[in-house]
Length: 422
Image 1: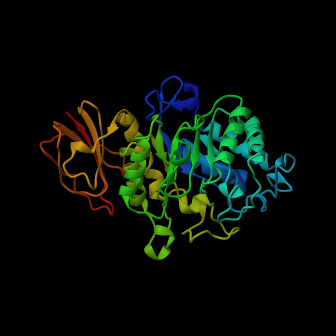
Image 2 (image 1 turned 180 degrees about the vertical axis):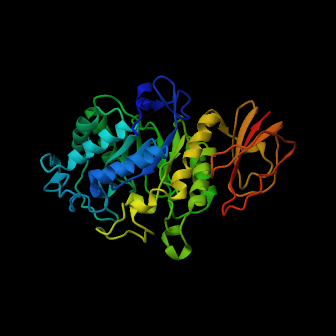
Image 3 (image 1 turned 180 degrees about the horizontal axis):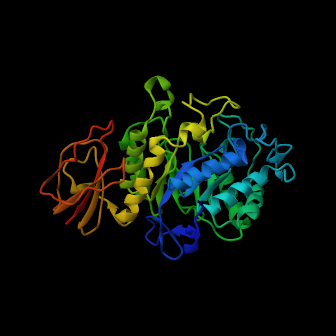
């Protein structure tokens, strides 16, 4: 059922004054819980878009990451209604007669009814610098800014819009073009919207654009090639330490049912792997998180060639365990005011495999255990409550002395969150 009160009733999204999280203009914190739906406009019917949005709304998602000019032959293969986004593959002549942009309008309208933002990439990166993928390269430094002005003139009045510049390609040598797109978006929008940049795998927007005024939020793509959680910590920390301070989140971590390191012979990331990546990012300083499912981002179905061995049809994947469990990370953020805490591993003696945030006066802390093991505390806390990231349930408060040890569990991934009070 569509919500009545909408997040944007609290005002436009912006970085907090301390640059550590996203908030509305009235000061209300915004807890980013996104799904990656890259091919939504290109591969879904209106009925399927409705199924997707209604399901994700029920599961607590408040952002869907989508692309106007999609990666998978988004220029030369029409959408499900036979419509193309451009005339003659020319970004200066959007096709306003064929119905492609009507589907985009429909998705914006329906998402708004359910209180969901669309984090819109105006184009995938292969349309500027192919490197790999279908392309074709249709942009240069001049026409990409003009396209930005046009798409902002069409959608820049939408309250449920977030801009995502970029699109999974190396920025080297193309920085001015991406800046041109940002300038076009800013010039064409009716009011200022939150803007970030989607980098290629294992990179951050901060490496190329941190000092740019248009960049409100740093986005990482920790990706699918590195299962090590320490990599996530290092990438979040590097952006946390940049000046001026800007919020940071992992916009593309391990996807559920994605082949590990892109190799199906190594198995697939499961719900526990997804939770580990999400909580590692949050506890390292992330201001929110993005979930992904390998079948859903590409909307795998019989009509299209599968990309890298998806396990099932996209609609069968909507109710995967991880998709239903990530809302509990948002619950933890809200209930325990996690965004007010700062990353602080010094409260722990064994810091190698744990993730923690604490208040500056050390009266509150949350510690994420990717796997159960005993750890000694370096700070004095009197009580602990254990939060189960599989169920969202919190155990009753218990006294704590010098050590922490999570409850017993027979789950495949035995992760827990300790909520500590002095």
